[in-house]
Image (cartoon, rainbow, N blue to C red; front, side, top):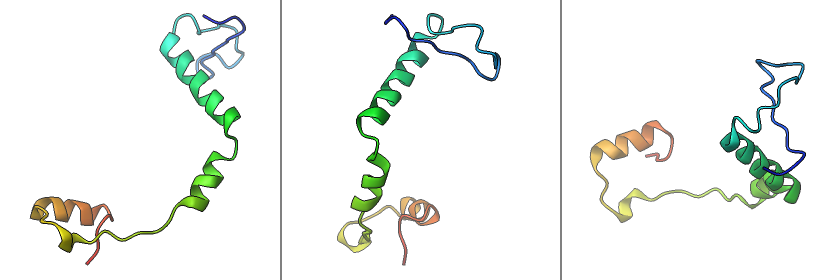
Length: 80
């Protein structure tokens, strides 16, 4: 484990008295990955919003199972 890495369960330990990094290595690594992504690309969410283009799925190009089509419409992925 890298030195200086601390992980606390703030719900159970709001005073941050017990380091859980050694007990929860997967959670520690996941936090490291997310922190690294956030520090490496701080404007990531803003850029993603700017690059997102609205598009429409055309159901006439292929054959969809009627049940799948109803489920996708219920989720808002398809419209009439």
